[in-house]
Amino acid sequence: MKKIIIPLMLLTTINSFAGEKINVTVKGMVCSFCSQGITKKFKQQPSVKEVNVDLDTHLVSIELKDSQKLEDKLIETVLKDAGYGVEAISRK
Picture 1 (cartoon, rainbow, N blue to C red):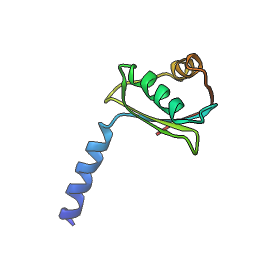
Picture 2 (cartoon, rainbow, N blue to C red):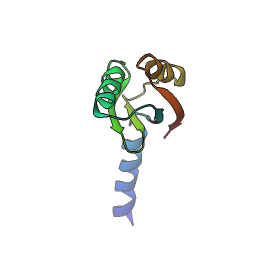
Picture 3 (cartoon, rainbow, N blue to C red):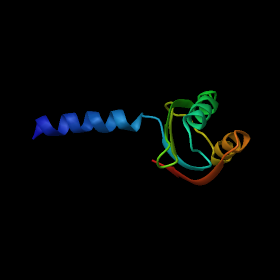
């Protein structure tokens, strides 16, 4: 039993320090040029660690650096300034 509990505790501790994940459903994103532009814009934000774009589902997944925040309003502004709209924002 101890063999199971200790790794489980370590895994829980590691995950609690991981950065927040944000999923944004984007309107108007249709090509690889869109994907590159959105990725570039979000990587310019100091709190962003990683950006992944799925053109098929129109989903932008943003992973933040540890203990960092990115407000919904800023996400909307970045996308609007790049020429896109936001349908939904969800956080994990």
